[in-house]
Length: 324
Image 1 (cartoon, rainbow, N blue to C red):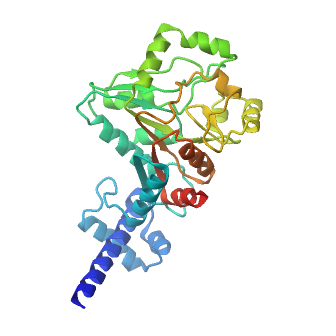
Image 2 (cartoon, rainbow, N blue to C red):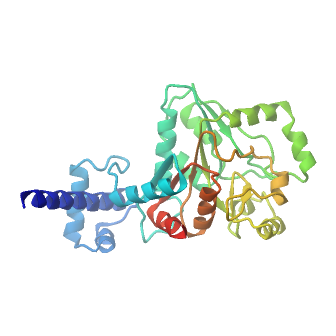
Image 3 (cartoon, rainbow, N blue to C red):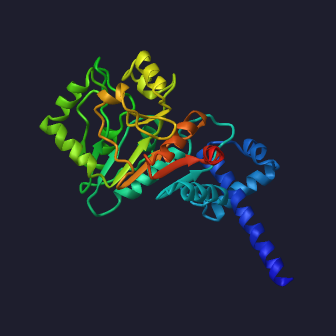
């Protein structure tokens, strides 16, 4: 009886700290009021207030959420086991938010910071996109002269405009690490032109550097009317339609893939200047994405072993597990 009572007490304490961590995340990260927290956690306002205070007194909150919420950890463990992931981070979801960056941007920043704090020289590769930009914006200033930052994808269209979501220069400015941008349009008119451009000595050196990356952080994009490639003007409506006819459901650094995670042969992939994908990755490649529109692309990227790490939120993680 004494042992059972102690076990129940331990469970109650763990549950209480889990609730405090959720309340702390909703208050300090998601910016909810205590009334909103009370409604979302189905508790009274005084209880919500006590939970937020407990998160502080138990040092669960600093600038980021330090308490590993049990539910998120269980989801991460199941995804890791199912897909053989080297890293899986699942952050709490705010049911009232439709943000595609909330929570995972902070975790992406933490991943980059931890990687760049290594004293040993590393080559860190990055993609582009809203989520990566949000992650870099949450990075602290650091001095990392020993590392090299390299882009895996160009950031201009054939018409000239650059992507608003290119992150390499900003990350270099924050970390003082030398950076190596991809000096090419994302998609060019022909495969022959792509091959010629990639034979230029500066581009060959950059592609070799990208291939040597020991840590990579990339977004996982959808291939629908809201595709970032389309919004940024890198591909046209007709090119998007062609890729969808070929089975495209998602893309990583511009490389379109089908529902099984296979890189598509043809279409814009034939004219893409991005660094080639290594499948499966020989080093650490972490995809970061969340939201309803991202579920199928993330699932496909996991099936095809395009990434061996994932940062997402708990709602997306549950949907991924439901897909099998």
